[in-house]
Image (cartoon, rainbow, N blue to C red; front, side, top):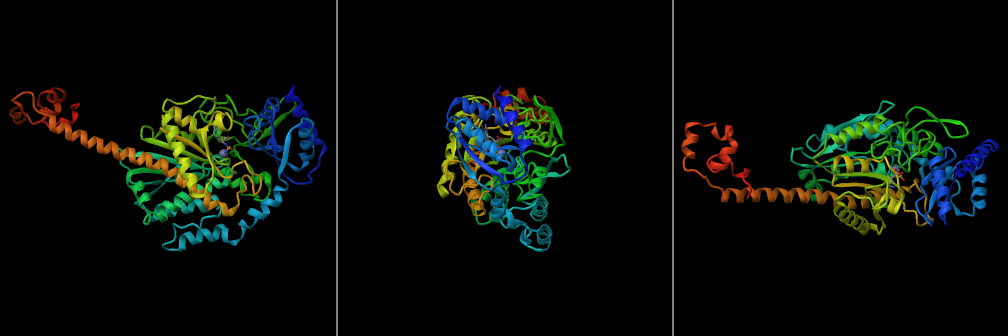
Length: 509
Ligand code: 0X9
Ligand code: ZN
């Protein structure tokens, strides 16, 4: 019933209004359970073109941010009033705000040709990209390529896969790979409009490449772990958000750019492009917090891993199985450090205590820098439930120890100077810096655990060596007359001639 009312309302709104006024962002506060359920229903069924949820409904008295197109704002306001919602207009004219905050980004200083030339010509500086700016995917890709070409000792270019529009999903692999080292993967930009996350991942790359000589901590990571950074997982979507940067419809695109799919929503057949890639992973696919309607911004796609981007990424992560110790995916916004599982409250992996301990420490470190307040917890406990996300899939399938989703600035508690996805440019570098401070907690854990396991290993083998002796007196003679005996009869020789055969390490101490 509620669903039909909402649909009828949206259709009436659509047909009776013309393009006028401004895109607005409403901040709604569901104060009753019924209002919350109504908001959740709207979230799961609404056509992005009309009501685009920036911050999804979670709990009673928890804020919901909704971008509404100009032709629907009056009716949406009436709808909220009619149902007794508490609300305010958080952004009155999004188009104007985008011109103010991001409009100048298309000037010469960010021009592709200019930057590509600079990356080619500027000997010695090919690795340096000015931070605090947004770049096209082609500039970012060329930058990654230049780094790999010029610093083969520390970075290798990796290709995760190819998008539906044919772009390469690129990343860098840092640190010398040896089979015993642990691996950490960091990505960003699975959601196209979350530019602050893409900037943050780029900042990490810049920091490692250009800051490693002054920073022993970075050198320590390069020596002891293998770190992959993939700054834009959804480059088609990202490029789409850049096609018309001050037009909210383009700039606020979230999904991939897969071809149109259609579904009958009870009233009409609607067809739209794109899949929410963070609903397309094979973890309780389509169960909760995801939509089967292609026009929804949380459309999960026709089946798990139906999309080339998520499929390729899952294969890439799977290829690291066994050594992949931490996986961190950067999103915006809400200032949250989230761990598994997302589909149901109080549902955890067996190592939840450790997961929580490191998250708490990371949030504390992050906050130490500028006082930014983060909360940590599982999705349904601190934000909302959903399924089909990358970190849950990674946690369950690959048994990764530390699997985290980080929602960067801004939070959603204040409204002064709050612009949602349009993060003020002067907040970009501080956001990246504080996030790095949090991420280093995870990197330190992985590095230190690996180091101490190596110390333990060498200590054990010393002990074994000390305590190890031959059980039988004829060992030396047997080895002399049959030089391969230790290898060919290994189990017997471990038992009887461990010392002579140099097999002490195989004896449990
Ligand atoms: O909904 C998502 O895919 C993510 N949030 S975002 O606003 N960036 O779209 C992740 C949500 C975090 N996890 C849970 N809610 N469980
Ligand atoms: Zn996101």
